[in-house]
Image 1 (cartoon, one colour):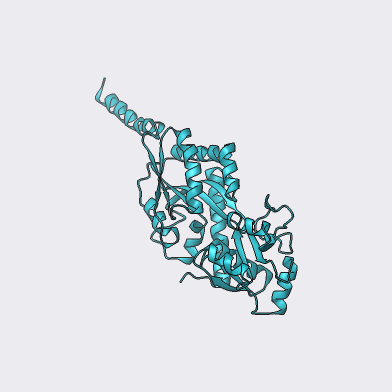
Image 2 (tube, rainbow, N blue to C red):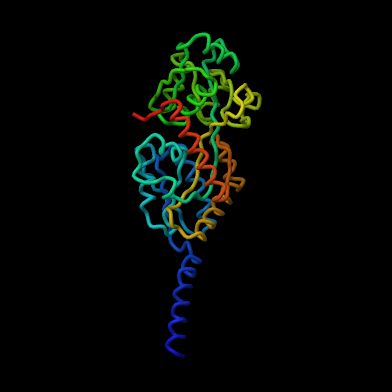
Length: 320
């Protein structure tokens, strides 16, 4: 063999070696970073999905909770992790909110690869059971005739309940006063106690109070009705066409992760979400199972980020 042919053979072998390596992925446990506290909604959902994915991939997926700064600490950890497929980000709606409300140590649009949307979470617009308004139209009419009298609670600045309320303000041209709380539980308590006029609560935490008659549901925030409340209209059906504000969960990888790994991980997420047992658990959590291609999820994240950015500017939304 001539020297030239030998060099070509060595180069060809070197070119194939990475492909052989990625074909064996995963050959060790995968770390799934959840940038929120253990026991919360995103954490519980991540554990259900990860368990099924572990079986499909043949490797354990270890949940690593890194809460703080509205998800930024955990997101930054993944952004700076090796792009080898062994560090995964399981994030929520904050991923598309943070770029507009916080100074980030990374570029959310460039430093991550969207893998798959896991699920969406519609919210229920609830008011005290004794409130004089029984429909969205009556609620908004009251707000317009009594400026400054109605308020809406949120689980904190920049949360889904905050953005849903501000989106209602913007589209309906009303000015409900924002009352932020440190979590959804105290917000719900004060709505039931008539200290606050309204609240956008997730299905899991709010539906029981509606069913028991402690709260009245006026509408849901998603584009379609909620299974548990088939007679409760959407806000779009209630005179606000196009209104569709949902929270969501999804999976990301650091930029530079090989495409084959992205695709395989994405298929594992989709398989998990479509598993009947997993799907049933997600529905019990008040989530609408999704499961999308990386390309579809990238478009979804781009659209959500743009929507939040426009709303933040229109309503002058900031995080203290």
